[in-house]
Image 1 (cartoon, rainbow, N blue to C red):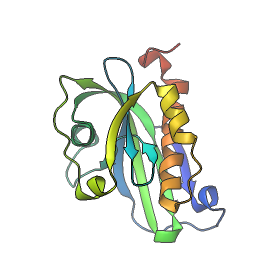
Image 2 (spheres, one colour):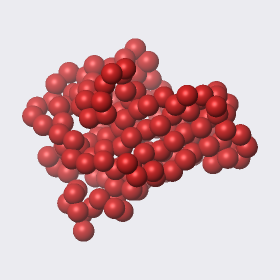
Image 3 (cartoon, one colour):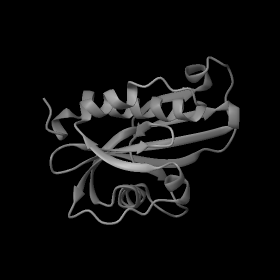
Image 4 (cartoon, rainbow, N blue to C red):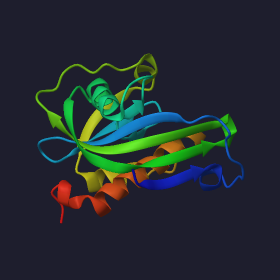
Length: 174
């Protein structure tokens, strides 16, 4: 899978240092619906946006994890279309490392119930659908103060930009 970026505290806070922790493995998807809009999760508690996704469970392959995460966070089954790339995050403040794998997917069928975690419920997660260019503006347009949210914003902008730039032929773009 194509490596899109390594994000460190240098990018987020200007501080030097690299986490030595074993990476948490996660997946995200740029999930398109039948109107060619993408799912954005609004994190109401922090008034910011990200794309759906989450950690890969032990023994779970990436495609299964994508399908599970999309169903849990958006209520939709999906078809995974292709890989987009991966990012590596090294957060020195928490000695936390994370490798995220990004995919393009499309919804299948009717929307079902969300299956949010207690943390996602506490963060007031809501799903909205936007054209991908508008989604990128919503994600990138906010100045965030919180350390972890800055990482989420940076990686989401990287993934959306990659899809717009190098996968337009798959999403109805030019």
